[in-house]
Length: 502
Image 1 (cartoon, rainbow, N blue to C red):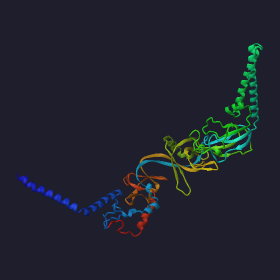
Image 2 (cartoon, rainbow, N blue to C red; image 1 turned 60 degrees about the vertical axis):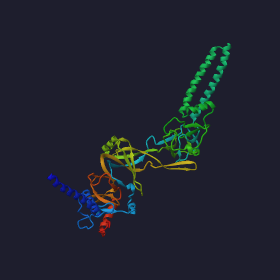
Image 3 (tube, rainbow, N blue to C red; image 1 turned 30 degrees about the horizontal axis):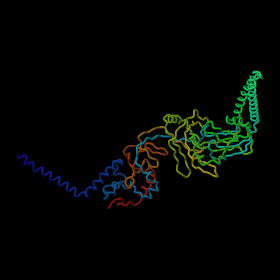
């Protein structure tokens, strides 16, 4: 009982002390809270900066009477390594919202850069239109440089091909003889039934008809060998007239069996008269775009021989990039092809920024090394797009974005590194042996030293060692300008009260 009485005053003493202490802290919160916050933030900055809180450039030393004060809404700025930029300054450096982004871990591929040139796809880009018969050009319906659809009328030719004329003549002669035999057989059939003529005579006529039918089939095939279609041969047989003029139409790009040669009695429509809905980007097969009449080799009144080129059509919807890999890079290039890693195309534009086309696919590698340049050629698919679609006087002209002969560089990945902090090379500034990035901290950008593990012409790989963390917001360009601004700031008279709230 005595022990309980002696313990009771002690409990009340401790309870009273705690209540009084809490009350004092609440009443003096405006005095001790800012100091505590500044000390915590300074401690964090010290550890993340490598433990050099009292090193070179530390503005919050023991002699600084304002150490520990609240710097706006983000306390703990080191004035020697921190910049506050106006909206105009951000625009001058090129730091828009898309260039101030959080850091994230990603897969980085080491790469090599090789020279390259855009080339046509052999056997696919270029189509050569030739005349199958000798004749004279009577009309040219298309213009050089014009965009045309497959099936468009290109040329009309008056035929002077002697063999064709002779073949058609023999074909019509056989048709006439066959008609005579058929009428005679019909007459003899009626007479034979009455017994006036022996049946042997009718049988001889039927044999003669079979011979003419066989000869006619042979002559029909001969006309096809001259370049006529089945439809044209049937038209000759129906109208019993020689084919005097030939129409040449643009062939189908996919090699379908569209009629490319027609007789002139069919209705025609020149390319310049095609309606808007007939001149869309996709052709009849729904996949390929229009053809471009690149080379026009004939003119009206010109005599052409069988097999002579009339024009050259090109199709630029998809091209190849021909890369030149050096001998020491062949093994790496084969690994890239085996892993199906994507390749980037780099276009250097005079007076403008470099254009980067990413995610291109390697089509194939050559199976021989060029004996002169000692390089291995490899080919990358390059989807093309129309840069300008222009119509002048009813004719359509296309300008493609990528053209054969353009020179560029290919960035080919050769080694993969996963879970890396990758920034553009412009996000890193160098001073001596040190590399820095600039991390956004409220309305300031703090300079943070980092360890650079790898760097190429376009990207920098930062070690994930705690100097920065995924999620930290950094400037992705203009690091050199920010570094110069920081040095200029350090070179002038420093306001000891700069950055402090009073």
